[in-house]
Image 1: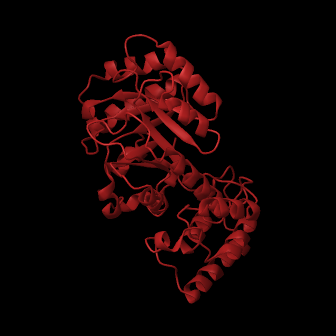
Image 2: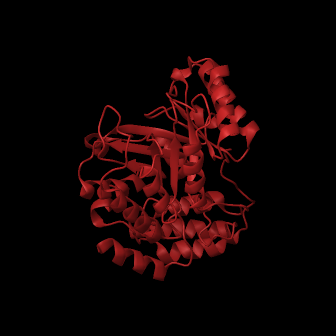
Image 3: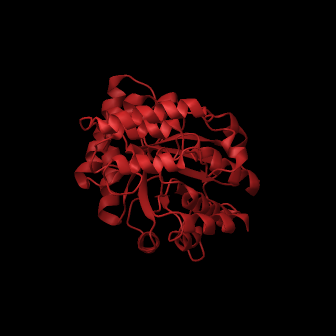
Length: 353
């Protein structure tokens, strides 16, 4: 009930919606009658969901009509599907990986590729290997997503090369999540580029706490389940609907001037606006609060009006970066106003494919 109240209040007070959290489900279960694919499809209209399909440690040997039907229904409901391939940490022959990608392209209507067992260290040959996979995917369809799974913190070079659009940088049991610390460089990029997977978490209450905690960790993709090893991805969690409802409420409650989507409007958001000031075709992360694609004075005014506000409960806010002092905010505001009134040249944040 508390989530329903929060959701209604958020919807009534916001002029535009922005989804900070995307549920990324390793959907390693067969789409038979009554399978979890049906529950995912039912929820796809309520929250953003990306499903990783995996017919047989990859696309399998032949097209499967049940997968065709499940994928089409899920995408028609608003979900996104990416196809699983494995890379053996850069040792699998590249031709085998690209052949699997081509099978997905021929057999299924999907939205991208998930590259599992991704290396997270150098040398440059590893980076080139994954960049070749990335370029092959983009040659099929430039808008297809490439999600890489090192499963842990990785090198910034993998993003800059680039080798993927999104990275799964945490995959572990629930008890490890409170102590997990993302790489510091993640905060310099849109949270949508990072994904966390948490399994073996029995408590639905803890699941909700972890969803809110994820916002403070530069994370846009999240999935939490009470499924356990050896395969924690062979069904949906028993608290699936509660997870969907919690993500929907969090997304609805986020404030337009919370540019980094960490649940609090503060100095870090002002810095995002200053960095992106003058950009066109801009995203929320670059400082576009009103969704018009331009970072300008109107966005700064929204930040000024919402400064100090939070959309996170107190327990989760305590894990976020502390609020700056009033004096510090005033000083930063003065700098921002000076930047705006002096009509700085257009400055853009780095863009990544």
